[in-house]
Image 1: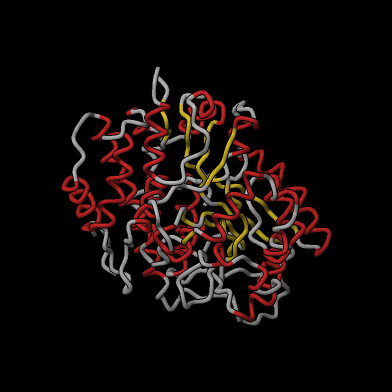
Image 2: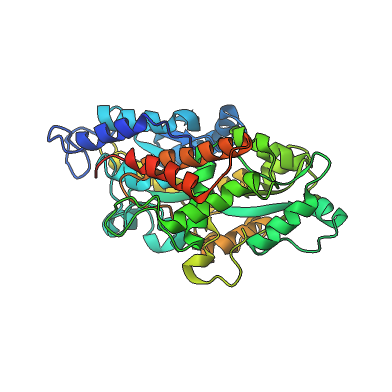
Length: 441
């Protein structure tokens, strides 16, 4: 999801529970698979997520493309761009009321949670064939479309992953020849780069989604998962505690990130990096944002997120699979039209055009050789996505996990910024508290 930056309110724990309950309502009928003597409407409603610099910018980008679809099919698209701050609440309200769009974008980390509501069209093999087949999609983004063993609840639209952005000029001035490949190297470089009001690393500590994304990848590197094989939360395992302590220590112990970063929740870390106040930044496909903020492309370097020295297999996981999926509500009155629209939006031509404009990566195998995705930045990110990425837990309570663990990290960072000690015990206590708030499966 776009970094995306999805601050899921704690109240959504209740909302999701309500939505899940609704799915078992026998009166909650679906249009999918039903026949009707009424002609399908010649319009579709589409909720797009905010991928551009503003909602208006998204409309300017999307409307010409949607016009192409109308010219090809005669189906007009009523577009609404929904800000990330509202999108999940709007979707949940729609799943509960049955009053929603025909087609919509979702953050890919929500896939399993939304799948559990039963409100979305499953993309089984037959449905996948109607949009060109599942083999068109790269494996990593396709893995973030719903619970394993079930038909995807959405298909990939825009793909992203985290990379380590570093300021080449500041590295050169500090006498550092190469970006760090391990965490020990990152901390050592960060200390060299921290001086005179500048810091080695910028983090977005007030953003729960950013926090949980990094906690997930670091936990993988420590051999831990936040859920066991049965879907039960295991937030306070030794590996998870070590992972989160490592992240909080960037402020608490290593002091390579500014204490004020603990409050950042509106992309201030991107601004700090672009302006030279910090020398490194862990972010998803940030190139377009950084140049928009005035940073010279010549100063922007990108490398994989570091790992522990000598790590391999899942312990070499560098990032969660980030991105945006496109889904269809089961109660659409124009199922064929909705699937035509999904096929159009995930066609090679549209996928290249839209991902190029947004600075993201096409999830299509056939688009990977396009020059748009062969910049040094996107080649690095694509390589990480293909070989060292893992989807966030595909469990019904995933969104609650994001909120609760992300908030626990936020609390720990705030405490560290206030000068309170960060210990294994204090990290574990926050994670125990988070796990206790998880709803019963």
